Image (cartoon, rainbow, N blue to C red):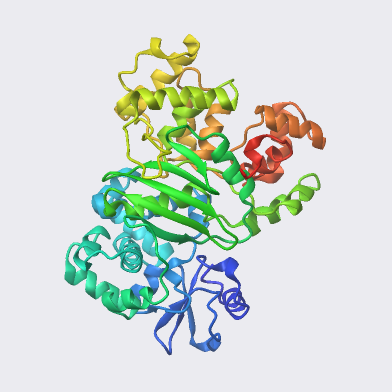
Length: 489
């Protein structure tokens, strides 16, 4: 979008927050860059230039605006709506892969050479993987500086910097303030919080309808791993360097997030997982605008616009849970998952007492005794085959997965049909066009709305909703009174 100068100028002049994260405005006369909704008086048109990423702005020598804090804007919705190599690379960079594994690790995961990855990112985003990771490290450092009392040396290494000097230079260059000055500014109006936790505000593009999003997570939550308490969804996180607990609270203009981590190097990954879980980088205006073109969906969209797709923090975890949930009720699926967690999950400490375990990894389940499962024999085979494929690496599921290839590999496993595969594609892999025509709730909704009832006919009718059929599923599910559609009390 940053190449459409006229459209960008209109967005800046109208301070349209819907475009935050789509592009960034660099002001030639001041040397700063802003989000489109920056509250200051818009600069003259001839003084504006536009970039596709904060990293590109920083690489061109611009520093972040202190008023609108463009580094904290929602991420571009493009990266969650696309399955090409650039989008997959951006999802991995957002998860901190470059900090942990370097550019060769990023390229290896995607099956490309480092040169190809750098060339494609530079062409589309104006910055290579190192510059994009550097911008993310700067934002992580800012969070730690402003929300913790950690010594600056600890902040530097937790944010992913290799040296104190690089940390200091980057913070000064990006924010035009030293780390100490950033902390001083933040502590003036700081609110007290529990020691050992990191409070955050997760931005999103309005509107956001939280009922089905948090309702689904709470109603299907696995005891010991997830809970709804005091108006917040809480769950344990298995992270690259340790584990953590996330507490997410729906608020009118942002999602309140409270993180407790055993290793602060996991902050970037934890934030990324929480945003992915709640689908916070979606563009609801684009999605709802397309779905409103269908006269049968339009009333539901108008009634509660901004529905998001409830996802997962771990794709392998969701795949296991999807198998446990085959042809049983929500309550039964929770019971099966809770037994698995109690027997094989890693115990964790929760100061609030409600969470007890991490969900077991595929490696922890690799030696699972099928006879210990209170499941039909065919489903035991399905589960153990899935776990074995995930544990030995013959099947990989994650934000970097190629959606079509993952579908093909899943369908090759015994006991995997279209419903299970599409559920995983929608909630674990993030495909915005995943569709479940055989789902009981979808078929009930179709009957009520006058849509075709057979899977083939419904799929043909749903072609008009592409590429947002996963969001159409949320609106169709909402016609039912099931607890997944209701924000818990």
